Image (cartoon, rainbow, N blue to C red):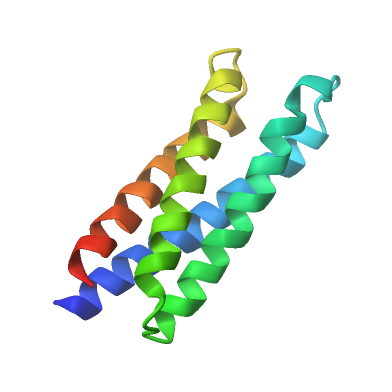
Length: 114
């Protein structure tokens, strides 16, 4: 059972990292990126923490719970920022917000299982 929870969370973190990286690059390719600076920064931070969390969980580390808590917090912040741009028609931000919400949920579930 625990292995399944780890695997689900690892997969959510990996998917989120890829989606956040894609969102950051897509934001950089927008015509006017000035209003996207916070989005890009959070995308990059979220991708980094998601990759780290997945790696630490794959090691079955005693620090997985703490890292998952931080990961969930950053994912929520990234989702909230991306949602602001998604309502303006930025599909990559909508996809990113969705992946971040799923990852935050998986990480929060993980902290209750560990």
